[in-house]
Length: 584
Image 1 (cartoon, rainbow, N blue to C red):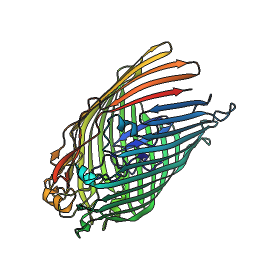
Image 2 (cartoon, helix red, strand yellow):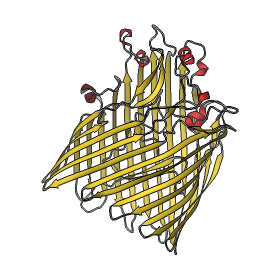
Image 3 (spheres, helix red, strand yellow):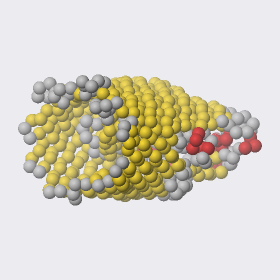
Image 4 (cartoon, helix red, strand yellow):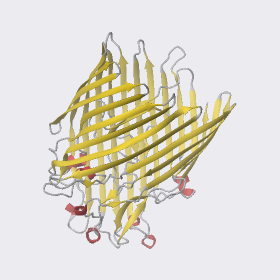
């Protein structure tokens, strides 16, 4: 089932500092409570829908069913407390609860630059697990989080950039509660569940008046509610497996965004107000058939959104063959996704249909031994029904980030993503693990009869290296872990400096496409930990250094109305975090 964006500070790192629908600086769900997390990129299994790029499926681990255990951790970014254990000695049922409180105040005092913002968050999450007979299980979960960013306008004598003119306040709330019940009444395995989740975000920006900026004030309010339910049945039939189910979501989103300027052209700025609500029905069925070393998979999903009664059929099929330690899979999937709330709320866009994608992939897997494997794939995604401005070759909603869409869009645009990717993984065996991955790709968009252009997100390549090693000696363990990321920079359209100066905000010249590519992204992280086991408790001291080399990565380029010049905004530099943890 689906939940609302489970992240704090959804405005973190965006160009306009306005919140995004699905991003954020920190997950509300702590690593203390998470179990296995699966990430599907393209060619989604039939049970997943309302997504074009990918799905992240998170599971919560059960608490200890043997004894009560506690975890307490203090670090430069706050405290983390957890408790877990059985409800009674006679039951395998268990609980797990986690609380975190964080502030960047201590990090700011040791020299980490957060742009003079006061940033803080806290969250509480829990998981109750009730095993039953014959593989039955009831899982009850919940989470809630609060986050805030505050920035006070500086005195005029201290102004160094546009932001210094404004007092900015952001408050975010996110919550969720639900259950999943699995049981087997006879010949059928059933699962059903329901969840209620929501998110409220408020952001205000008030400028000084002497000398006045072109934008006096901005306000952003969003209140999202999602009720998600599902029912799934699985039945083994001879050499096959039949799965059928339905996902039913009710969405209720309210948004009110406004900008006030002294130039009498406020209609140029993003202003959206309205409510988007309705049922999203997603029944599906999938058949998996095993023939010798071949696995055939075929499914169909139907999607209907009651808000504007738009629908789609999504066939999905794959063929896999296993030869010794090799497997090859050829797959096709049709997927679709509704538009963002701000798109529906903008004038003339409330009847837009789903954006759709046809996705083809060829994947090869090889397992060399018990702990080393390689996966490589070639993929091609063709996007249709992309909202564009009629008669214009310059604008496509494919390129939307946190900015607001144009009005009166038509679903006549196209797009495509294609590339090759591979990774080699050594699982944590003999206290050593590593993952090496890389990809080369293109992301493009097209309007009408115009030629394809590189989209905002076409960085061309990605690469990463992750490795770790632990050394154990009786009751002591020393570990070192490292990660290196190197990828192509995202793209931006050129800035129209004259229009930006006149209107008091960054204005992009989309007629030239996204031809400016930001510098390549580089980041290295290092973690060193020392753990000592004692009767009844374990102590761990760790040092995590993010962006070890303090590399200055460009986040975006904008027009600064105070400096009256184009300026590069950089991402965070080196972030050292020292933590002390006790498990008992």
